[in-house]
Length: 201
Image (tube, rainbow, N blue to C red):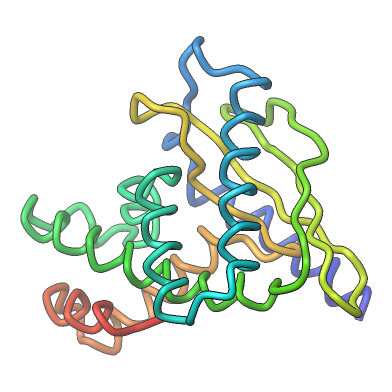
């Protein structure tokens, strides 16, 4: 199990880093304290949502609002779509980004629902390459704590997170693989992929 986790962390670092080269270059206004403050706010919202007693549907709606407020969804969506984003029209990219936001909220909302009764706590923040990494620890009932890392940039003009690494699994790398596979299944038809994403996750 330990060797498998190490392998996943290594792959996540390699592919996740490759996926965001050139996407995240913070302006001078962003610093370690600001990056940590952003993630403190995100973590407070996640803790509130998972322990609110709300239904799954209500939680998904709240997670979508969280992604819209704190995540750089356009950057994440473009990175996930990869090369296909180059040939997409502006209207297609807008539609894809909107559908992708809903997909993210459902998929990662389900993952965060696993934390019900637990807690996430921010532990550290520091510059990493051309962005900032903020570390947190997730503690679940009956399970050992694990790492939840957030990558923060202000490339889009606001302090936003553009990646999560959950227990060594890199969201950007994972979604690039998943979205690529879905697009292949749709024979490269981006409009069909957009329709599929509206209910996926």
